[in-house]
Image 1: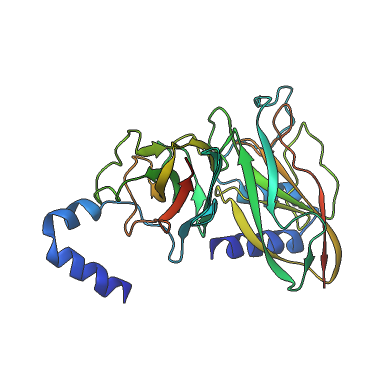
Image 2 (image 1 turned 90 degrees about the vertical axis):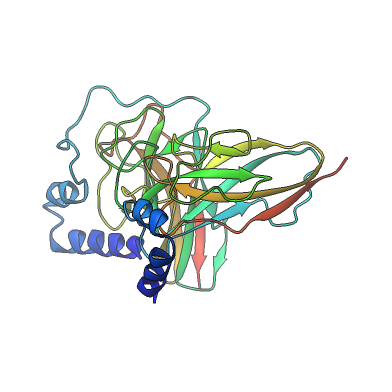
Length: 141
Length: 158
């Protein structure tokens, strides 16, 4: 089923498929998730430790090419970056290429979204991408 | 599940021959350097620490098979064999005390290695009281200096 899906994608987007065909794959069932905070959490100070979870795969720092590993990227207040390309490196896309699984985050008052996407040795999402649920946190004024 | 396979291979390794522990260790170490006692250990920053995120200390577990997640702060995770500053990989100690700090962490059913960079696992324990503790190992499975050791927690499996 997964293969049929991949073939469908490949047929539909030849250019992208040619690119993503070279991307690292993780074991089936591998998934990323945000351990903390919970979706909808209200964080009075706006400062918190984000805890990044990865099941069924391992962490390796950026630049380390090992089977079934990747490193975390945190997407803040943004949609997912394009597949098949290195994840941007800016204030909405935080890289944790040193193999971190926790990050100190500070957000201004308001509603914010947070999502994880795993990247390979070259910061490119795996194929298929390993992404967490997009959660919302609220920092009161 | 790779973690299950890993545990299985460790269990088999331990069962096949405890006297050949070094051999079993080398098998899991992949391409890492041969196990040997070293004069110097890999440094770790003072602010780095590891902890068991789940289960909680004193937790009563209704299932024999449960998840353990490994918390790491101010430090990174890298697979065994990867030499990179401020990184290491997790080892879960079950019902045992800390191993010697100047040599590779043993590889048996009381010392589970997570050399693929895993940050959580599932383990299965018989009913009763058990202790769990994490210790980081460097590329060669040797604890850092100072060692990155979690609090030793106790759980009860019903």
